[in-house]
Length: 105
Ligand code: F3S
Ligand code: F3S
Image: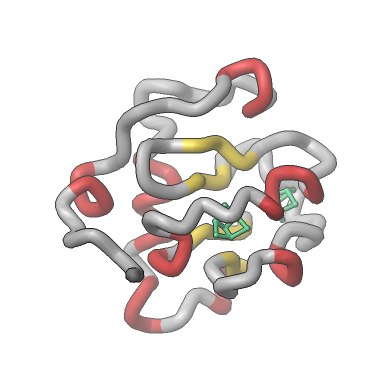
């Protein structure tokens, strides 16, 4: 799977959403998350993120390694809805993201 890491927090550019052929990038309160069971590793999302937040799971920089689990944990209750557009934006984040200080600016 691909993983969205910390640079997305409080940025949410959303350019990635339009590239994903399987609509598996879901919006949380402060960042977006890739559903690991739905991502087909096409890689189309990775180059379009202006803040380079997206990585193949094996290439996640050391300081953001926990984001692989963080992306997965976003779906603990949501499961695998099979499409982000019908789910819409959600207003919560996993605790590790919710606890971050405001990013950017
Ligand atoms: Fe976030 Fe980059 Fe997508 S900022 S919403 S991962 S384009
Ligand atoms: Fe979609 Fe990116 Fe995976 S475009 S299929 S989330 S690699």
